[in-house]
Amino acid sequence: MLGGMRKSVRAELGEFFGHLEQQAQLVHHVSERAFSRARAKLAATAIPSLNDWLVARADGAGFVPRWHGLRLVAADASTLRFGLRASTVANPASADQIAFGLFLPGAEMMLAASLHSVHENERQMLFQHLDRLGPGDLLLMDRGYPCRWLPAALSQRGVGFCMRVERAGNAGFACVREFLRSGLAEAVVTLKAPDRRDCTDYECPPARQTVRLVRHVASTGKVRVLMTNLFDVIRFPASVFGDLYHQRWRIEEAFKGSVALANVN
Image (cartoon, rainbow, N blue to C red; front, side, top):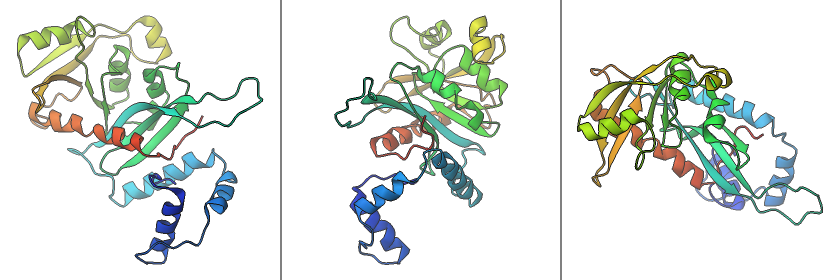
């Protein structure tokens, strides 16, 4: 379950018990019905602790790779549609919910995950998980996350980040639009200070943030702009950020399967 079940329950069970008995063929010792009954006895609150234990063991054994000495963590959210039975309850659960996750590319493991209403904001979901990150982590994000308070909050915690920030038209940061027009490969710019209300809500300093912008041209010719707080051009030259950002794609692949949520609200 913690590894992520991407096949039928019957196939996963047969493969799992086959591995335990060191056999190449499927071993059908446990029925789907028995598995469902056993799963119903496992409290949802136990799953986050089990996942934390698994991640810690994997990291201690060297199965969580590092990129230039940093642990990569990809953040993303995806809409899930659950099959609900007919209910007489006045306000039954919604079939559509948002699954948010922090994923470890390379190790192919969820660091943390949670379910949210479709009316919640992805940046708010990320903020609720920031305590899972610290110095030594590098957070990878797509275009759904750029805002002024997030770089401030991450830098204050010592968390490295790399997020895609270019937007169509006049949307997004003015400094990013100017950077695109400049034709430069990289530049160091200063963002406006976060709003005072955001500083209070998201516990970040009300100060202007200096960030580094890197231009990346994809194989399709599409131009991307990546924002980061990694300023060391010797250790982190502009040429490495394209491949770095591409590793965020692993969380998208993970959401395509039946991901075992590590933290269900």
